[in-house]
Length: 121
Image (cartoon, rainbow, N blue to C red; front, side, top):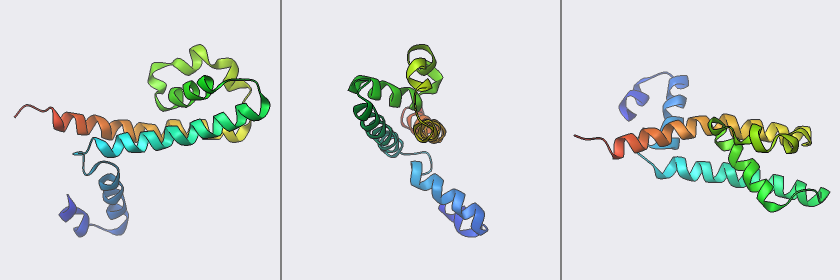
């Protein structure tokens, strides 16, 4: 794929570069997991700081909210954290959306890496 990236126009080259950065062209499991961990930690720190400033929720709520934003397919956020999500300010609501949007490509790249690792040949 690196040869195809070198032969393409700059916009396509950028997409190949992002794909290589995120998952080593679908071969890496470690890169998407590290990316998910960073995105989770960013959300956890922001939510934990906000909850500590208002004194309303505990650390487990911040952990759960950040986790539910990364894995929206499970539906934990709407089921258990609806009241918490409704009280968030706009900046943290935007951060929740950012976590959700960024998690989809990372989960896809993780799935590709797992498929490559356990593929029968």
